[in-house]
View 1 (cartoon, rainbow, N blue to C red):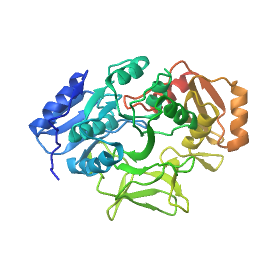
View 2 (view 1 turned 90 degrees about the horizontal axis):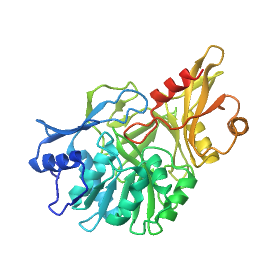
View 3 (view 1 turned 180 degrees about the horizontal axis):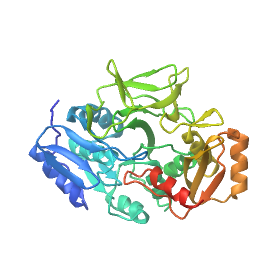
View 4 (view 1 turned 90 degrees about the vertical axis):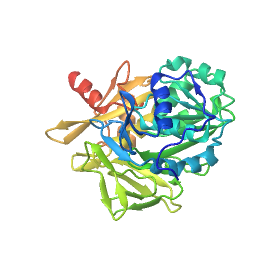
Length: 372
């Protein structure tokens, strides 16, 4: 396998923004790549440098070899029908590693690439339908926005979702909008790339079984460790105390459980876990319940310090939230218990989001603190 990325001569760029055109030129020149919120540039080394999403703090810059991504191109090519007849859609700029990965993978196989990074969400479906997109790479929030139009997308064959939890409502809406599509959710991180993916037999609430050539190990605390050909090398800028290596296994500090069949269930990030009245609580679990309760809403849960209980959780909701706050909080207490239940549920007009299509927890926390 080459140690630089490949740009297939059959690759077409459809309504391409400047950063996608720049990516094509840089890959074809054989230079190293650095991608982030400011676009994509070349650098003297052969490595790929790209930003993390920054969902829990300042973005970090990770360093990985081209081979660590190319190793999965053949797997996905076979699974998602990636060839010169395919048309791959990406929904954000290259500040999101998912969009960068999808563009490089599509170019490797010679598929056409549609970038919707500069297209309004209410025009996404019409653009995809007009161009005959067959493969979508997007986050759950982006999938919600796409499905909101209700427009049919019969040409779509594969919907590849990463970067967060999918509600059953979103899954149903996606398959309704894409009647010929197959939905695959994958779990991973910028540092690890693919860890697990789902199929038709995946139980509700699980992120699936290990992706090909991935070995999973959970330590006694449930921390997830991964060994695979897809791991990053190191941080070029910044770092995290939760990112650790152990004899070829990598952990980014996420916690989960495996069932008897090997399906992984995520509990949350260790660095987001808070202690409420001496009980450990993962905000992600609260978000998952609220998403099931309010499937048409965007949901985030943040923790604020509390002198008596250690921390208190606050829910932030935007979009379609038909239930009154009292009913929402009551349902949380009944389902999750008093320690994990938020003490407030704030409605806001628009959820602060990162370029990667994930909630901006730092901005959300600042907003909630200003509402006291």
